[in-house]
Image (cartoon, rainbow, N blue to C red; front, side, top):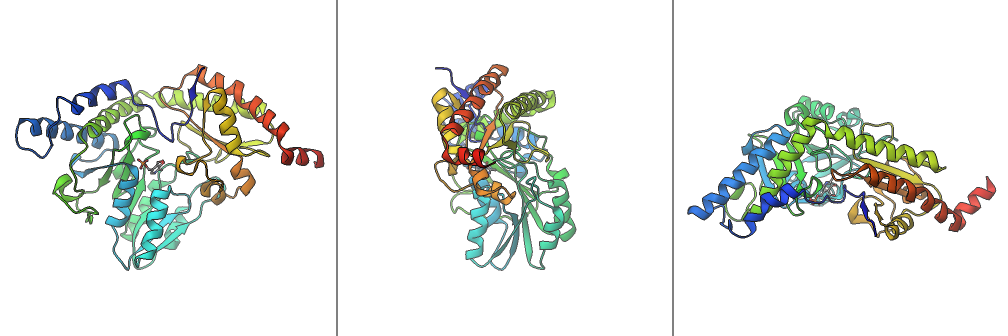
Length: 388
Ligand code: PLP
């Protein structure tokens, strides 16, 4: 059976070059990167080489990169490591749970958090961020690209608000890295999170950029790894893979490969909208990452569409991977003003570097017929159709 994977915002397949680069570090090059003998020096060199590549991807110095176990840890390290009890934090209502729940937890330990809203396009207004500032505001954390809609936030303007106010700015760039150019100086951020498995490296590795001179309270107690910013023996194969993936996605961005992904995404989006009534793109008028489209198919449950498409060989998602299976509508889509039934009827299609024109053709034959069949079966949809 043919299988097409359009859920790259949940996770991406390893690029073969990335797998080849990391492979020796599972077996013959096994040293602990903190050991002073030959074996340790070999892996230390590989880790530092990877650090350079990651730094190149986001235009910072290698010494400003802290390797972590993924995007969630990077976000938590930034939120908890840059604040202390009594501080105020500004974030948004559409953040990934790694930021949202970390900020809610701060509330419980004597910090205050403000969650700024988004408009109907899914965009944070930098003016709202400015108006939320208080004398004790320490940190602003606003994501670069939303994982459900792909909507790109005005991080540069938010960075200016932070600079003018003299507060720290963290951005979760997990869904932006490798899809849009990143330049930490241009964005004005003091901290930025990335995750390997969203950019064709493996799951379980990520990094936090921390601007030189920014005081970060480590969250783990242990050895002096990562310049005492993150204790724990480094995941050498994962870090090598993240370095190689960074190098490859950076080169692809330079070549403009993402224009091709955007063209495929646009063809998918337009093809679906041309064939399916009462459907619309969530966040369509906002700037978006080239690989993502999130579409509501009114009158049916997103979960039912995901299951029906999966049975035919097409993998898509109702939104954040961790909320798949839950019946609550997406907090992101509700924050954008969608009705709960429309939010529940929304599907995320996310393309990757391996996506082909044939994959899009496959999706374009399956999605309209599946939606039509489910609507036939849906008493809610048929009632709406009769009464309108
Ligand atoms: N931030 C965003 C925007 C994400 O999409 C994700 C993963 O879905 C994360 C953070 C968490 O990253 P990880 O899965 O590496 O912990």
